[in-house]
Image 1 (cartoon, rainbow, N blue to C red):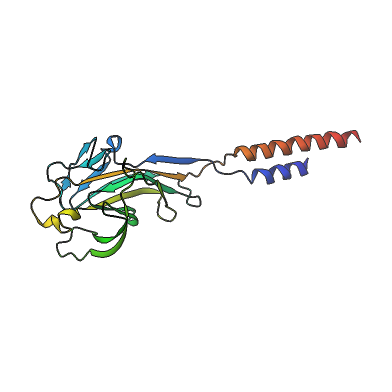
Image 2: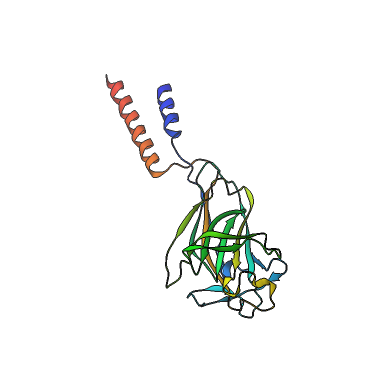
Length: 234
């Protein structure tokens, strides 16, 4: 009996945590109230449009409210985060007019641009002195659109995702009207942003056996029962 208990304990040690959480972080009507947009100084109120120049739903201004630099941010909360297990961000669609940068907790994950893939320039912040301007950056082309499916791209969030509050940010540059377009009165009347993605991570909790582990455990139990019956007959 003692040997049986030891064997069972050993087998249970190989069961794995099957708790997992996944949620939508895309820019869409369902998340509209959670996203905030800004031109770096003042809040913006983009319109959700069913179509855009690049085909498919997009957030765009439609009235020249946006300038050469603007951003969207989504705060989200992670609870019971098991940082020892993989976590990821899957991005099915990401594109902008003209270029955009994707961050999670201030860590850059990807740069896209309608003139990509290739190298280009980008303003990291709305800085009148242009000290945040950088050239020679590598961009991938907009993806997830009807005329450019691409993706999905999966980004490892290990060491990036945090227990508690997290922040996903997208910075957009309207390079078509000049990368310094935010210094003029009216530019980027048709600038747009499209993003569709989800975050997935493992939660801490009582370990739940996988099907293969359950099968192994049952097999061992039947084997132990058979061995005890056999030994009792001798």
